[in-house]
Image (cartoon, rainbow, N blue to C red; front, top):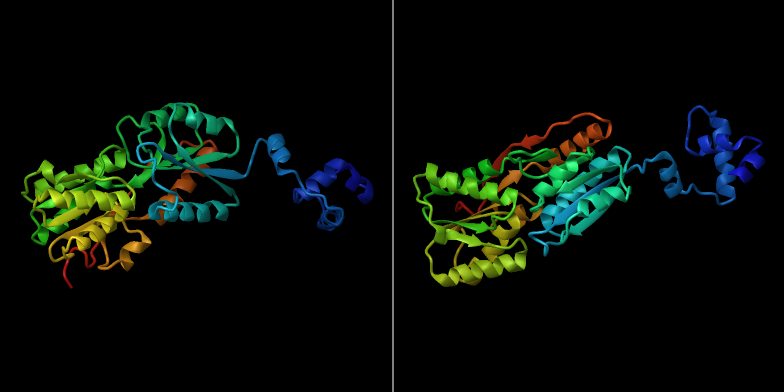
Length: 331
């Protein structure tokens, strides 16, 4: 900057302001200084600038995986959520720092915060880290989490009404004459637990008894979900419908059912959760509980920016909607 200042006949501070686009520097002079900088190959050291200003103009997007460590960022739900968050973040003039974290020891979130690589953090999912998130939120404010609303929750969260989603899925299946409805999923994370609660609530409201033999512990990845469905089919337990934790699990279940010679929805009706892009293009198209991810991403970024500005932004719960397609009702 000293060299550019000498060539432009101005002070170093004027060069600094001009290269930062400060409107206090007349446009003609700013353009002249920028031209000199470009001609001589000068670029701003953003890392040094961030250290000086204590601002990175970056928002971190974190996918914490503990209970479901095998999930990939290419998981359809993650892909859509990351894409929507990135669109919202860049629209507000920030860069995106994406970080998938396999949680295997305490202090993982504190280390990310202490790296000072982002001005705020957005987490996609709570995994089984509810207490860790609570602890961090007591001293670190610019953080918003996609996930379930929980008792005693002190961190800001945006999520869907998972209980209601499970309930309407089962109500739909029961209303179409299904009486042996299996649940495919895990119950080891807040959103999964709530969807399972909704499943049981839907059974009760439909006058159907809860049968633990119809609960199929199912991992989150497609390959493992297909294996879980195939194993369940081999037990011979009778069932005529499936409510799956996610669309990925539901689509895997349909593959396993077809491989076993079962028709969908003739023999078994299937309902998923999320409404990822693949849901409407599967064969048959998948009935699912839609989460409004566009609203979710927008709300997460809005709340984070408010918290970065020092406001006490509250958590938000989004409604869900049942999208009926061919996997649960014959056309």
